[in-house]
Amino acid sequence: MSLKGKLAIITGASRGIGAAIAENLAAKGCNVVLNYTANSSGNRTVQLAIDLDKRYPGTVSAVVRADMGSETGPAELIAGAKAHFHDPRTNDPFQIDIIINNAGVSVNNVIAECDAQDFAYQYNVNVRGPLLLVQAAEQYLPHDRSGRIVNISSVSSSLGFIGQSVYGGTKAALEAMTRTWARELAERCTVNAVNPGPVATDMYGGTTPEFQARMANFIRTAPLMVAREGVDSAEVLERAKGDGGRAAYASEIAGVVGMLCLPEAGFTTGSVVCANGGMKFSV
Image (cartoon, rainbow, N blue to C red):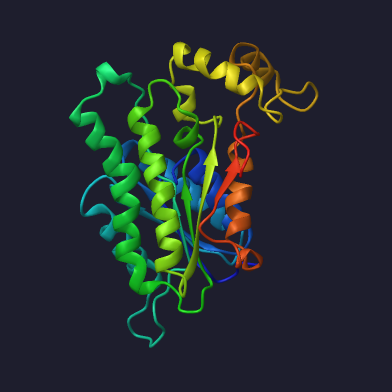
C-alpha cells in the first residue's frame, strides 16, 4: 500500500492501458479518478470503478466524463476530481498526487492522405490535452516533489513507422513536453514518459493487416515479443504467427507506470522509459 491515500487522475481509463494502470495504482492503495470521453464507455468505466472499490477496500474510485481533445475538457476533469474528493467544509487543501496522461488517438495515413482535420484531431487529444490538463492541475500539485506525472508516449515517436507522420509526431511532442515539465515542475513532481510498442488493446487490434505486416519485422527482432507456448494463450500464439510475435499485455505497461509513481522513483525525471519489449532500447 505504498500509495495509500494519494489521488491519481488517469485519462482514457475506460479500457486497455488506462484501465490496467487504474488497477495497478488502486492495488497500491491509491484513490483514482477514471476519465472517459464517449457515451459508449460510460457503463464500462462505472463498472471498473465499482470493481476496484470491491477488490481494494479503503480506496475510492471516481468517474469523470471529459473530452481531452476539447479546449475545456481538461479543466472539467480537474473540476470533477475536486468535486469528488474535496470537502469545502474542511480546511484540508485539495491535492492531486499523480497524473497519468494516457488518453490518445491514432490514425494511420501515408503522407498523401494526411489532412488538416486529421492533424488537428490527433494533436488536440495527444498533445494539447495533456498540456491543458497539467495547466489546470498545477495549482493542486504537491510542493515537496512527491507528485508524479507519467505521459504515455509510443515507440512510434522514434522508429518512424509508415503511415504515422502525425501520430508519431504527437508522441514526439509529448516526450518533448515531458522534458520541459521535468524542469518547470521540479519542486512539485517528477515527470516521465513511457513508450510502449504494440499492446493487446482495442487500438492495436483495430489496425489494418497492411500496417501489422509492416510492423512484423520490427516485432521479430524485439527480444521480449516472442510468443511462448505454455505461457501465452492459444489465441496469442495464433496471432503471433502473422504479427511476428506477441503484443504486450496492458498489465506489463501498467507495471512500469506504477513503478514510476512510487516514492522510490523520486530521483527519476525527464526520462522516456522503454516498455516495448526491446523494439527500441533506451540510450
